[in-house]
Structures are given as structure tokens and as C-alpha cells.
Amino acid sequence: MLDVSRVQKELVEIERDKKLSGVSIQVFDDGLSRMRGTITGPIGTPYEGGIFTVDIQLPSAYPFEPPKMQFITKVWHPNISSQNGAICLDILKDQWSPALTLKTALLSLQALLSTPEPGDPQDAVVAKQYLREYPVFESTARYWTESFAKRSSLGMEEKVLVAKLVEMGFTDEVATAALECCGGDENAALEKLLS
Image (cartoon, rainbow, N blue to C red; front, side, top):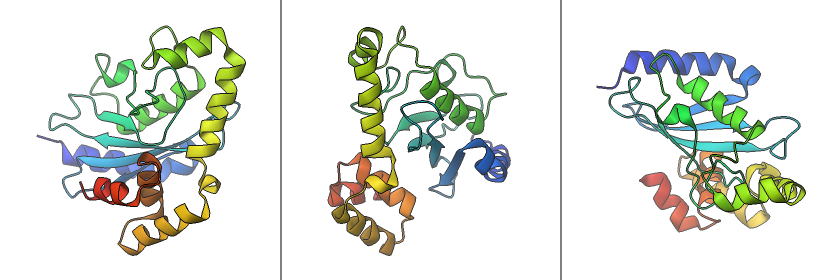
């Protein structure tokens, strides 16, 4: 069974330190099993200035099993699927330890943005580009950050859609992330938010 008291303590720690750490979490259900995390793009990387949203699902055996994490924001990175946001990171798989926390997992994702591991890719096309054409990789990653991870990248039409979703009771951050994930499709975003 999910250790609710531990998760609550972790959430308090994340909230207290979010400005310094650059990571935050928003809870989606009373059982604390569904959340959305955000991380800021590391300075000096193509991801700088971006706000990246991550879907977090806690298994019932958490903290003895790792959280399931997947990027909602589209990211051009060797260890993150450009198609579905799946993440290749050892601590989210076989190197997880109950001593780790949601905060350390999100900070590890932030560190992964700084130091890709193209030798162990989630997205082989991106890894190949990283290794063979680094300047092209860097400009593509920067373009994706501008297009998908910066709030100012929303066009007027998307801002209207975000406002509609906010009127329905969703936060601006969650509505924006859902629209980004669904390519601006209002119905798909709403369906995702309600699932």
C-alpha cells in the first residue's frame, strides 16, 4: 500500500524548496498516486528557460518501487522519447532505492537534461544526431524548448484554449501542459485531463 505519510512529507519538502531547486509537483487525486511535476531547463543547455512537465504515477508499493514518470512536454533529447515522452534513466528502473524521493527523481531528470547519455538512448534518432551532428542536435533541442516548453510560445489561439480549461477548474500550468501534449487539440487535452 502507498505510504501516504511519506509522500505527504516529500511534497512538503518539494514545496518548501521549489524556488531553489527548480522542481515542483501538483497532486491530481486524493490518493496521492497521480501527480504532475515540473522542472526548469538547466542553465547553459538548449533547455534553458523551458518549463518541462512530467506525468508522475506512484505505484501502490512506493517507495519500494520507483515512480512511473513520463515527460508531457515534448523534449528533443537522446534519453527521452520524442514520440511519447518515455524516459531512460536507471533510477526510474533497476537502480531505484527507497532512500530516493520524488524530489531526487525530478532533480535527476533535470540533471539528465544537462548530461545526456547517448550510449544508452531512449530515442535512437536523437542519439545518433547528438553523436554525429551535435550542432544540429543543439539547435533542434533549443527549437523544441522554444516551441513546447516556454509559456511565451503559446499563440493566441492556444491562450484562448488554456483560458477555457482554466474556467473548467484546471490550473493554468496543467491546462497548458495538456494542450502541449495533445498538439493544441482542445478535445484531446480535455479528455487527457479527465482521465
